[in-house]
Image 1 (cartoon, rainbow, N blue to C red):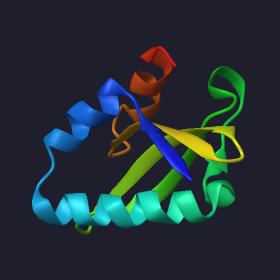
Image 2 (tube, rainbow, N blue to C red):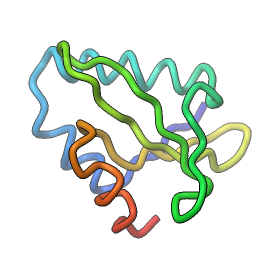
Image 3 (cartoon, rainbow, N blue to C red):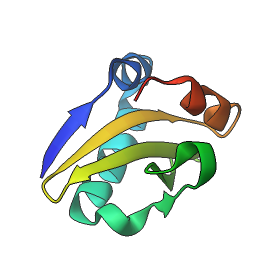
Length: 92
């Protein structure tokens, strides 16, 4: 599975601590193994899926887009606060 990332995703990952990155890596592996694990969004966010996981005892969301059978694009990661507002502002 080929995993692509957006500049927004890279900026958010740089701000994370070691244990948070380990939890994020586990979530990315789960999404890479089964791309249908996340909840598909509708409306303004059609084509985007969001996977909810626990990052150091806090619920976090990982948004991604399935490009084809062999590749996914990681869009952003973070807590629920303003997550969908920021996701709508992204140029996907």
